[in-house]
Image (cartoon, rainbow over all chains, first blue to last red; front, side, top):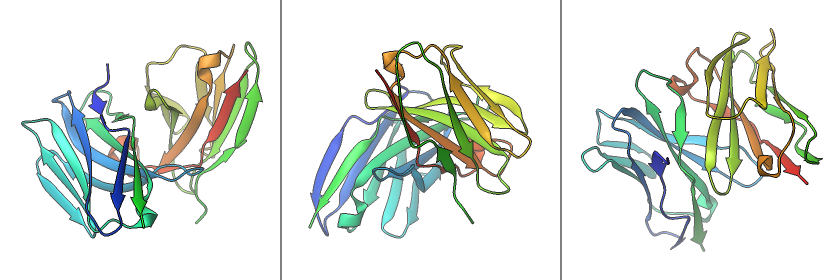
Length: 113
Length: 115
């Protein structure tokens, strides 16, 4: 049962354009969402997060949008740079309960120069 | 400050063997979590330790176990290895008691191949 779904295994965009990575979830008890970026041969690194009480959080070129009614969040990268090429994981945390992070399967982003 | 280190980085084992992986968290971090990453399942939570106590566990069989030492270093063990255990095993450390409420810092992982 995949509670956090990243339906696009890969995404390719041109340098300077917008990258939009999507994530859907099924568990309405999730109260906090995170995005991690992973380069080959390295561990994931935290990128940006959003609480369920917000619908947008921005950090430089990265913006995360949350649509609770649709159980959908997206990560926007503007403008995209070749160094952004990596695998992006969406993760969610359950309020109370086991409190562990549940990750999606990841989307591989390729930014072409 | 040194990051999370994991040893070994690569490991090849055969079915039925057992394996022990090691993780040294960032200095001062007391929480260590372990994840399994496979192409088909993404990152899946294995377990979390804080102050030498397992405080959370994922949905993995009992063949997967772990422990944490007084210096916060952690080991995970997989017994009776199966082909499906081939994966990247990631360790993450965080400062506070509840790892999911604190930023987690990941190590580079141990790539385990089971033949």
